[in-house]
Length: 117
Length: 489
Image (tube, rainbow over all chains, first blue to last red; front, side, top):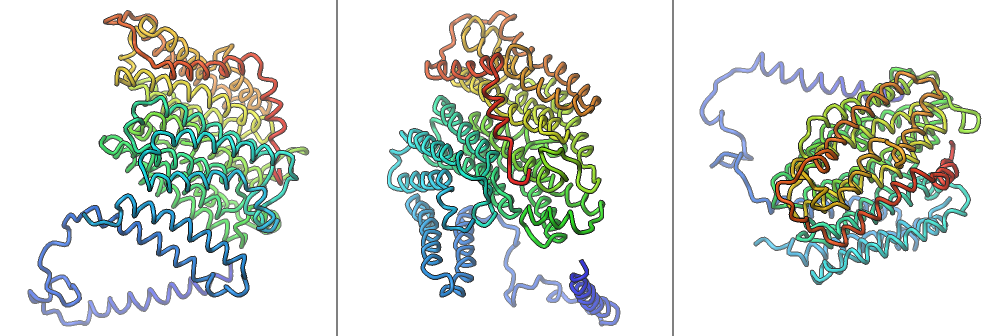
């Protein structure tokens, strides 16, 4: 377990620094609240409505499809780095993996999962 | 064994994987597959079973670099899961509830659960255990919510997801602790690290309790049983039947493999003792007593048959856990035996619920009033299943229970045995209530109840093993004797 102490130390130091600065700003900083400052920060845009709106369930479908291919990319990277060492065998394994995923994409496409309406 | 030579011991799983992909590709083209997806599923399962039989002669070994084990134990469970899945498909074929669903996807997802269970029962690596558990869980969530138009099905699926996510989070944390002390996710390595290194019992307790969160969720033991009634009630009935047997057996398979590989010293032949005096048997013994007591007491007040059977399935998990704590092979063999027995009686009882609900649309116990006059043969079949679930001779449930209790008494766990026997008595009350409503109360109108001949035949087919295994259980016992052998046991 001893080899993990640096991580604990780093955790403590970083939370001390971050927490310390927040505390210092709270104690020492001047406070002049205005209406503009109290607005939620939206990357400089003016917020026009409540963020707690209901939005279409279709977004979830897109999100799920996105995650599948995101994970695929995660698996592709280590293979891409070791492609030469893994040789033909690794290539074939990857092809099978991608084909299975493509099967899923094909299903989603045929069943209208990629259409918005 | 390296990856490439391992493939030839992986045919059963490959067959099922290809089958799932095939169904999904076919259904992408045309909905016509809905008419025959169950036939190709059954054919694929039979093929896969033949492939499993070819593994029986193979040398016991770890395949895919010790990620999976090829041993008698995994072969037993693989065959068991193929059987459960096949029977579930048979039950689904006779269910009107399933008739209006997207059946191709339905069967493809059932096969996915089957694949996950087969892999789980042979996994010897924490990562594979987690992955296959999730494979089972995620597919079950979808199956539970398959009746999209019905609010109770969606509600059940959502509750199941939330509960399952919390439990698998717990389990993952427990696994990370095991990885922390041993530096490996492989069960054999973990065992070696635990035996040689110095680990504080408190740490071990924390890791075990967290890990058990995931395992107990799968076998629905107290205190991880809250999802069971709602999920079993909301799901399509064939899926309820499937969940009450399949994933539960998968949970038991990994529970046995993990604990009797990692958490014990000694071996099957010289006798087991707990690892470094860390007494996990007491912990699980208490859970077992609570599981059967809470399951049985809660079942008394139920008016819906599916909910009643849900609580009864919790209670049965408690009975089976009794065989788990005794640290001798008899208890574990009794669990393996009981799973088979439980499969036939529980699926049979659910099939009866389906067969009646097809015609009447009712699942309440009250709706069975006088059923013995309206549909005598199915009522008799249900009586056999219920007596078997109670454990009354000469039905198979009795033999299963005798083996469990014998193992518990042999190791002098008298209190647990007494709790178990008292629970069997309680269970007689609520099982007999269904029988009383069917036989002793006159129906309101005596028009015969239409039950399709397919369902009658399958019901009859379920009665046969319930009686045969109650009278002539030798062959199954021999099979279990031979099968209880896994690498490192």
